[in-house]
Image 1: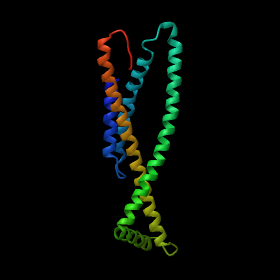
Image 2 (image 1 turned 120 degrees about the vertical axis):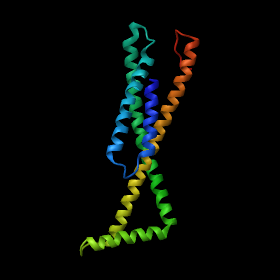
Image 3 (image 1 turned 180 degrees about the vertical axis):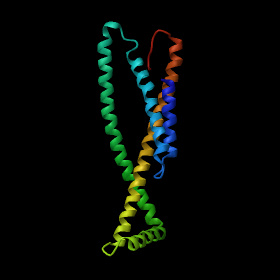
Image 4 (image 1 turned 90 degrees about the horizontal axis):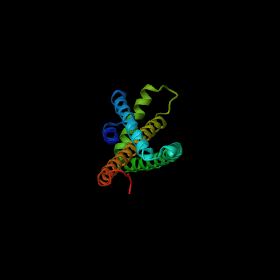
Length: 184
C-alpha cells in the first residue's frame, strides 16, 4: 500500500505539471495508466487493513460492510468531484475573463487576428467578429477545464500524501502493539 500511495502521489503531481491544452496524448496516457496501476495496491491494502483483523466467522459481514461503505464513498466522491469541477471551472473562467478585461488591448488584438483569419478563410456568409468571439470563448472554456482538472489532481495528490503520513503514523503505533491495529 505504501508504494501504491507513493506512485499515486507521483503520477498526480506529474499530471499537474505536464498537462497543458497542447500536451500530446502520448505523454498523458502513460501518466494516467500509471495512476491506474497505483490505485490497485492502494485499494488492495485498504481492503486488507479493513478486513484483516476480523474473526473468521465475522469475515463475511465485515467484508460486506467494507464494500458497502466503499461504494458509498465512491458515490459521494464522484459527486463531490463533479461539484468541485463545476465550481472550479466557474472560478477559473471568471478569473480568465477578468484578466482578459484588464489586458483589453491584447485581447482586442487577438480578437482582431481571429476575425481577420475568419474573414480571409470563412467566405462571404461568415460573421468574422462573432466567429472570433466564439473562438475566444472556446479557448477560455478549454483553459478553464484544464485548470479545473489540475486542481482535482492536485487535491488527489494531497489526499494520497495524507494517506502516506497516516500509514507512517499507524506503522509506528503498530510496532508498539504488534497484535492490534488501530487508526487512532
